[in-house]
Image 1 (tube, rainbow, N blue to C red):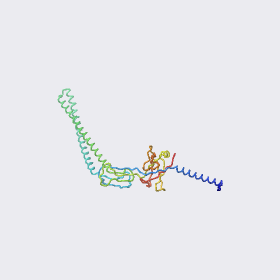
Image 2: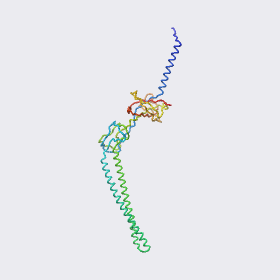
Image 3: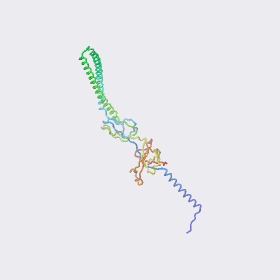
Image 4: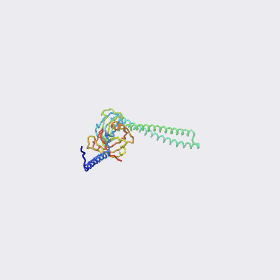
Length: 307
């Protein structure tokens, strides 16, 4: 069989093509390895709003999906009975105030009487030195002076009781006022109501959940990084977010936290290759100004390797 000999020029051309193909493959491999892609599920910081007091819900001003502002009234609890208690406390405070004024007047009178008796006692004691009066008169005045002191102590004790009672009633009034204020349930921040737990007319216990609210302007996802890739991801690094099913939509996120402790790959993202891997979790925050991102939405997180 005849042997086909290739022209040297043809052999050179083939080698050149082979070299070019190897160069392209290596270049693509390097370009691919310059990025890391992770899977994630979008989530948000959700706050559960609870009632600080008990009572019947008399008004309800939100639905699931309602956009609310910080301080906006969400619901109101009936406060009629608290109003009656507050009126009683105000009356008691007024009565105790009158008692205090009357007792203070008695104290001032008792002090004046004591002062007059004291003056008289000192004068008669001086007269006794010159035998211008009897010992009996001095002793009588001493008895009156002691009685005046005891009366002052008794009045002061009564005043202390009135003051103590008034403080107790005022504390009770402050507590009732707080309950009245707590009966108006407001949003702690601006966001969207995700879940509503109450209905109008329902009897609500203190501590019962009212609704769940989330600020959807900033969402986040967690990714799980193998130890070998950990040195290439930095805190504060910008990343690209691709929405599954919307290849033309990309958003920018930022690495806000990287765990200092390794863990086994969560079962929710378990694959055959990573089921025995130790990984480090990282949190990626993503501004959601256009509202494209939703809680529970799967995304791909593309991270540029950094040294």
